[in-house]
Every structure is written in C-alpha cells, then in structure tokens.
Image (cartoon, rainbow, N blue to C red; front, side, top):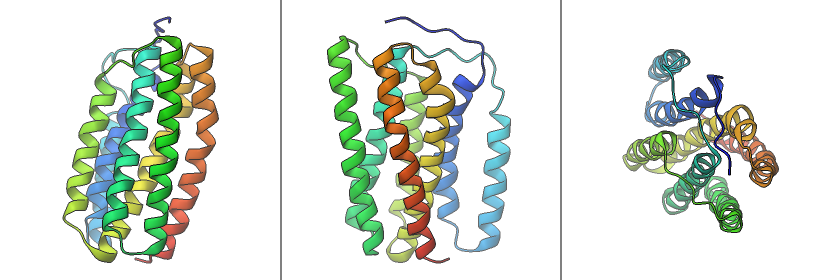
Length: 208
C-alpha cells in the first residue's frame, strides 16, 4: 500500500470542513427562531472560510482514508439508531432506519476489503475530528424532543451528507491509491447523493 503525498490543500481542508459542518448543523438545528438560525449559518460560513487554508496539514494515505470512510459511516449509522428511538415523524424514523442499514452495509464492505488487502485502517486527525463533531451533534440532539428533534436531526443529516459528498469527490476518491479502495469509494458515492436528496425531501415535509 503506497503512502500518497500531495500539496493540494483540498485533500485535507475538505474533511476538516466536514467536521465544521457537523458542529454547525447541530448548533443551527437547536435554534428556535429564524434570526438565530441565520446568525448561526453566517458564523458557520465564516468558520469554514477560516479553515479553507490551514497551515501544512498532513497528506492522507490509503489506510487513513479507509479509517475516515469507516468512521463517517459508523457515525451516521449510530446517529440513525438514535433517531429511530427518539424521532416522532414516521418519515424521519424510516429515513433513520435506512441510514442504519445502508451505512452499516458500506462498513461491512470496507472491513472486508481491508481484510482482503491486509490493511489496518489507520486512526488520524480527520477521523478523530469526525468523532468529536459527532459527539457535539449528539449532545445538541439530546436536548430536543418531538418535532424539534425531527427537524434538528434532518438538518444535521443534510449538512452531514453534503459534507461527506464533498470529501468523497474532492479528497477521498482522488487521494486513494489502491484501485479497489478507490472503486469502493466511487461505488458508494451515489448512495450519499440519494440520501441527501431524500433528507431534503423529508426535511421539507416537516415545515419550519
């Protein structure tokens, strides 16, 4: 397995922006009025702009990319399991069940591939940041019930899937050196697009 080096900032900034989006989604969803939402969105955009050009961040090798992919899927599967127990709207519960099923299935494929290639996914700064962002998102959801929880969870899912899509297309897929790893990431990318479209549809049905 080769260790890929690159000077392109997008290979490291986009996963970091994914972490920022997780926190922004949790904070934004917790607001009760439109003015507060707008303020939170502006702050999140400013934070993303600030993170767009970090000082020399480490390049990602295939073992690290694999760990990021596994972590991202595990996080959304876990969030889905939590939402199944706490959501009230049938559409939200059904969406959450799909997240548990689909992301769990992708992780089984990823683990099987890593075993086949005799590669151990490597913990890294990006995957640790994802875990931290997931914890913050869960904390925000834990304070909500009923329709407020449903809206907040779906807002979080929209932000999360958009960020993962960006990271897949601009960082993880281009950065993967092993052909089978690249193919796995490429094959699951349309699923994230479908999830995002469905999340937006479900969220629209919940109103303001």
